Image 1: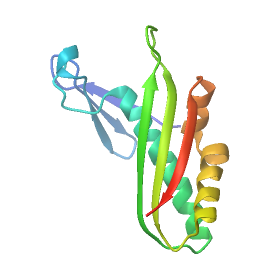
Image 2 (image 1 turned 180 degrees about the vertical axis):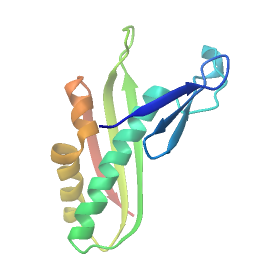
Image 3 (image 1 turned 45 degrees about the vertical axis):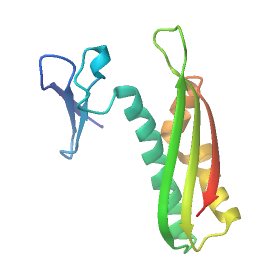
Length: 139
């Protein structure tokens, strides 16, 4: 079982979460919403989780294929629903940027396997109604 401990660390909206291994994330909201901007916003943390989940999958797949990864980055853009509470992620677009020995075809296949089969965060977001699109760039 996973367990997260959350603790408020100021009198406003700044919190630290700690997992069972002691890893932490600091969260806050922007100044214009009453916070101090001293942490990741919770909904942006969800996009970060999507990136991390998919990245792990892609690296595992490419390593199993004996591909060398020299550089791996992502740009993740998201738009939330307007005028709704809660405002869920409506559209998410990811650009996977890879450099290494892999061909465009192998890079796309690894990304497709992650996004369509293995990434639990992507599946969770899709179940909530998000439309996730993606593209691969070899750099």
